Image (cartoon, rainbow, N blue to C red):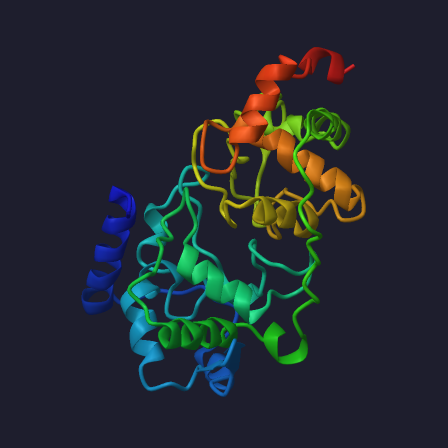
Length: 295
């Protein structure tokens, strides 16, 4: 379901296509971008083409209002999106993406971009684009890629493997709280996961714009997926372009699973955390002491 602002953004983007000339401060020229119209994407047995006869129409209909004609994030709607509540649109020319299965600093896979289009980004103006067919989505992936020269000279990173999820136990939940303290998740997310840690108000993205840490307690959906595997992946890949780093070099796979289980205890009751909430109640699990942690 679209939020009111998401619906408004979509409507205004369509209006902008018809009425408003789009100004751009993009680093790349139209000629440079057009030179990559042979860009392809590959998802399963589907091949997407930036040269498709319909993909430019789909991009102008659904995406240009926020991301702009040149994919630089300077669409007509972008000026009305105020961080951190409403993040600015992604600048596709940079080739930097939050939601990836690949190591930090590397390009996402075509599947990653395809999944983002289909999933949308909660707590942003990016909705779930379930009106698109699979072929239209994979063509849009190719179109998104053609904005950035990175996709010409670089290959996506190798997806980070996700080991089989272990059984949730009281020992693992408690160990996850210890990991939460050790890698200092609380500094941004707060000791109770309410996005009120001591660093929360100072955070900015890689372009110097205010950005808010994820609030585990408000029931919203994590930007890059809601399953345990999705959350595990976020630890290991990081969210490029944001202050959320990769912990692939700091925590072991077992510790990452422990952290997933602990973070589930900070969320309201949902389809994923029934067992973790029960364990937290059995343990009488108390929030970390922020004063003690800061000493």
